[in-house]
Length: 296
Image 1 (cartoon, helix red, strand yellow):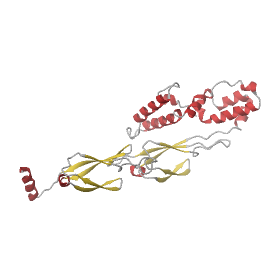
Image 2: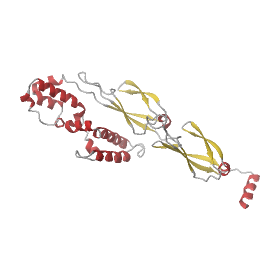
Image 3: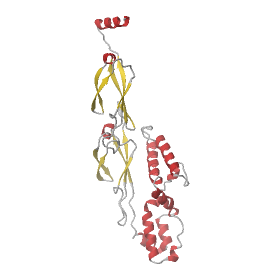
């Protein structure tokens, strides 16, 4: 497995504090967020790596294993079990030959150091290893991300039925435990990591949990006030328009925005910008009335 230097990905070294990691992650995640880099596959790849690095380094236990075992950190348990078995068998003299960190070599190096080159392959076959993690991308429309629903994914020829909670974000990564590669020698399966790619909507923009849209407003309603019905992600919303509303006016509809991820009943806000539509093809009578108004 290719070694991925999570510290290098975040622009840090091993002396980084938890705050350093948090700050670096936020800065880079914002820089490479898919919303700011649409259709940029390289930015999406880096965004995924940044998420992986943060997931490991922000967790004290995972970081400890990563620092000790390097690329094989996910198999740390297998290393420790092998060491314990060797200790129980009383091979103290041979055990002392292994003094380096696991990141300095692969599993074969480890077993040869522990048991000798002749026995390494035999011992290795008796140890359980965790399966490989899989990574997949799932594309959604904004309207789909606004509601909890189920989808079926095909990963390595296997269909996996998953529930997608309302409020999932563009670029968000979720883990489906146990749906990665099969374990070796009865070891646990790896996990499946799904990155969500949410397409831009033609009339609605999403920022966090807030929604933004522009609505045409006829001149008469803008001047006199009234009620209009707007359609946002297939939801019809009745809005009261104040008299003498100006072009470009923005109104906030509290709680009419996007659902908050895994917080049932909570929503962001909806911001509506009015674009006043000037009437065309006026009759002579209508033009005369406007002329009369202009003289008052």
